[in-house]
Length: 275
Length: 311
Image 1 (cartoon, rainbow over the protein chains, first blue to last red):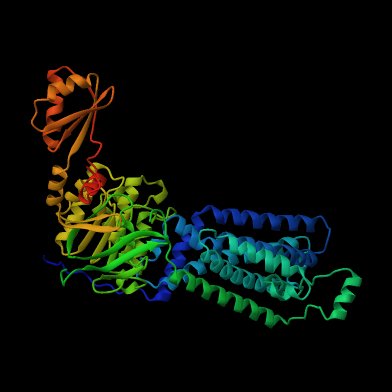
Image 2: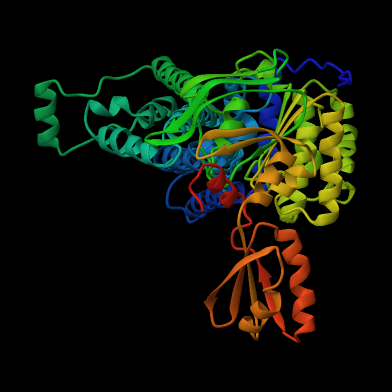
């Protein structure tokens, strides 16, 4: 049989391929419904905080800082669940995973590309909402916009850290049990963010605590005065963490989450549909 | 086994927990079109997934162009895969999906769209280029998958039930494209559970049954086996006993049975003659036929016959 000669092509290098995957995934996300839902939820939070500020309940900075500290870590968790935990499982459900793993690029490049998309969307919504919240809470006092810019900067940094680390962890946990993508992320949230995050000393293990440190207002868990005294006597006091240490913790969480996510997808056999 | 085989399986087995999908298969598949025939659940999809590097063999080895396909992106550029399930991203257009694929395979960004359109037009999909995939019919989606697999002209094409959902006109085009690739020296493996579908593309077939390779050879021989296989033809009509009387003198009919009040089953080893004779005899006897079916002219029955499970 005569073999017709093919034109040899050189596939893109892995990092360039990862970037192409990110671009394609962003197109999919922009056309999907999840992003619209996320923008609406974040927008409602901003509007609520703005109204509360206009009603004169609190001053601009207090409303901004309070809203970011109390609401935005949970928004980061919710968005990361929505955009990162299902990154692999949605593709397994739709049978698309076989398409990704038939590309002439290493699986890690595909996973990194998909992660970059999730992280870009989550941090984009978080940072965008933070900036809008800042402007919204300063609407009644526009003269203070410049003087509180440092607080805005810390809030943006905190949201970047929260977005990058939560998406990496949830991508890994969602890919590890692709049949039940929310199972491990929910356990993570229950144990580390709610359980440990609400306990003296243990709170240092939660990402939420470090987000608070970066914001400059760590959510120290407080009990009543007597309990606090007893805890202090026992030496059970959450140590003060410097800003750089919290940023380092978030960087480590991000790197290890992404690395584990890559390892899980690299060696998994995903079965879809019929055997 | 040919030394030049593009696809080679050596004592290949694949199981999922306690379910054995493919059991101890050794075969070499040369360039050209080869049919992979087997009833549903025979292990065809598992075999194709291991060949395409999606899964590892549980035992034995798979070699595509001499290389192990598992986690081998360098080999992935030489393999095209089209499955009958999933695969497409609903939010994209066919041009975007194929363009992305071509981009990763090294086609310049400015040329990917033109190449994607060219690939789609090969399957008469010029009208679907910029439509969202989730708005396309099942048959069109299937052809988009084929266009994607053919777009970069891979050395090995693995097509899992490629004609699923495709209308007769598009089927003819698809079969033509598959044969063209085979004639151009590519190795094309087409899985199907329908014998005549594969017959229209190639004479070379592999028969897989319950995870085992039961035959490897020419489709005509398989067809002969099918013809020797005792057939039943069920005729649903208003007077089944009269129809039996009208056909009793036909040498090709070996016997009758009456599974219900309105059905007569003809037993034959020459089904083609019988199919031709039934309408004529019914017309002569003024009998109204409501339905003509063959309860066992399926590949499943052929396999049962081949492995000695059927009568």
